[in-house]
Image 1 (cartoon, rainbow, N blue to C red):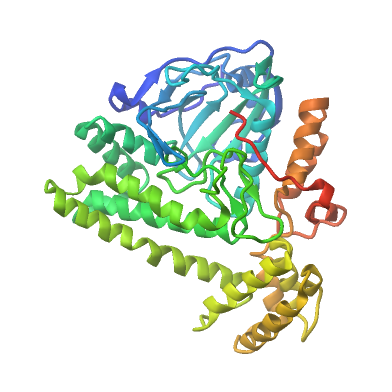
Image 2 (image 1 turned 90 degrees about the vertical axis):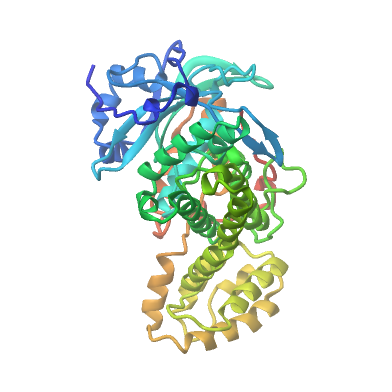
Length: 490
């Protein structure tokens, strides 16, 4: 077997951080998709990964030399309720590799069989959710969002039983790490100060080495995670993305998007938009993502209190000050990204109101989120008029806003063509439209036809390009095509 140079730093932590076990072999693995470009970035041989030996590894049927398979332990708040033990119930971390750029990455098999954390589950994954995570995570990467990545998808030749029998699959996921807010909560809930300190030291060394130089390294770590999450969610928001299940066990300490379950991108703009079938009260609606991010970070700060200061009152005060800085991270990033989407390279005092009023006009006019900004990019090269207005059912509010926008742009130095090109670089034409994703999944799961999946992946790999011949993938759904609910698939 070709050796992969694993370097398993997490497995060198105390044994109570994980359970040591191998994946459960599957009956007849078949490679569905290999991300050759990502493999090359990781210094892995795509040809070997696509060979029978490589596919055996990707399915969990063979353990490469140097790997140390583990299921990691963590806790978490799920829809506000705390579970002191969750953990990798259907995933095995094979180990870590160093990419060509020197960065460390986890290689994890998702859907690889039961673990001590499975809580009576089968530890398996169905093909549909595996392909959904592959599509959306790779689309997010192409959009420039920090995210876990998909290295491969393999069918198992075995059905999994959910409401019906479904084809099984394994996703090979790549992440900067799989450490979550819930990992800190796991040790805090047990009063394990030694474990909490070891975890924090590991995270600082792996993700935030600058924190080690701070006068209070653990406070520096908390500040760094707050900033990373603020940047990440602000980026989501300007793309119309809805995570769907922002539980604390689904929040990566590394500041990457993780655990794509009932995630979705909005079509017409509405801050109350919810797609997740299990989010009955809209806890994780589009517009709730900033306060929920702060809520989750507050749970992290609570878990880290023993590290911040021996005096409880001092520790609480330090945590509150750090959390109070969240808005100062989030709001400027959000506004700056929206400025760039609107073609403004400089800051103006009324820019926040201009963004807010556009979003309100979009909501009243039921305008498509993605296409509104894309058409504004094209309209920016015109002295007046354009096609954006056509997206609004009530265009009068847009007309009033557009006049203000054009007046604001007169204060910018760029030419119309330069502004259009800059806006097109940050306003995608193609996103993983829910109805397109569902069509691709249905074809693959119901008919074994992976053509729509391959086409969708190819289109989403170049989200900012026009791509003649694929304009249908940019169109919002017709009324009969609308997808109103998405599912975890667990």
